[in-house]
Image 1 (cartoon, rainbow over the protein chains, first blue to last red):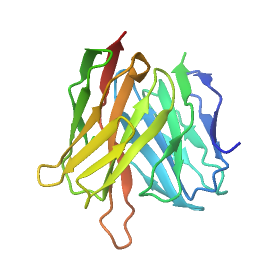
Image 2 (tube, chains in turn brown, red):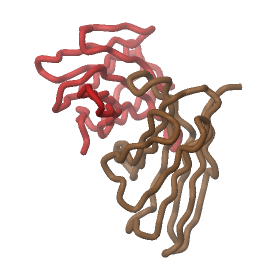
Image 3 (spheres, rainbow over the protein chains, first blue to last red):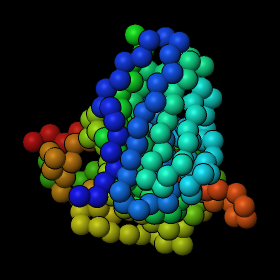
Length: 112
Length: 115
């Protein structure tokens, strides 16, 4: 059953901690993305990757880091440098950067 | 930066009516896509229209693109209560060469269809 999986669904973080959000896809897609969505807002691009071992900063990359060691995986680390990390995080993949994107179900991160 | 801006921000209609949502963008694009999001879920791709296309249909969906006005519209005909969701436009911009294009989303339109 092909798709894109994000885990966990809910995540709680204490201030000052780094946390890593998982994103895995078995669609054989080259491109992967991370977006942040705040309540009632649109999606803002954090990082994206066109191929393995390469990624680009999006519009709001500060306080975040990613890696793309495998085609199937694109984990996002929310570091302590991100001052307002509470948000809904969405991962997506597409065959190429200019084709339709498939989204995971999201991870809701809350800082406590 | 948000490339697309949807209008209206919220739309409330009765079942059976048509719903029209508009999207304006700022820079040239390679394609424009529309997505749907049910509350608290991931986005689902609806339709993609390329910059050299003017209109595209998919079931009850009709999308138009006017590159001279940098705008697009999504029409949902004969709406149903199940169409209640947020709808987003997204633009793909690619400058060419060694740069990478990216997919940028607008703020979205919240559509409510009353039974």
